[in-house]
Amino acid sequence: MVDKNPVIDKVRTLVQDEGLIKKLGIVHEISGVSTSTLDNWFNGTTRSPQHATIAAVVTSLGYREEFVKDHELDIEAERKAAAAWLEKQEKQKAAAKPKPAKTNGHRKPRGKR
Image (cartoon, helix red, strand yellow):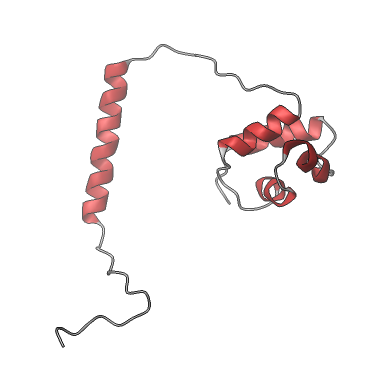
């Protein structure tokens, strides 16, 4: 199962509501987003589409994007959570095995020649 961004399902619903889910060529014509991109969102392996392409499709279908504040911000709690997340990421990075240096397909030099 591919963990997809929920915005893909929301856009799919908008396209279906407009009767264009089987006419992605028309969506391409009015939005400028390629049919292969649309097909990869809805049927392929795209997990997190670019915001600009989502906005292009949504606005071309006559919808507008809106940001709505739904809760008050606790800055100190957010800062603590961000610091804890960063510390966890740094610990995971430190615990990971170092990757070998890239060689572009060439052998490692043996020393000075």
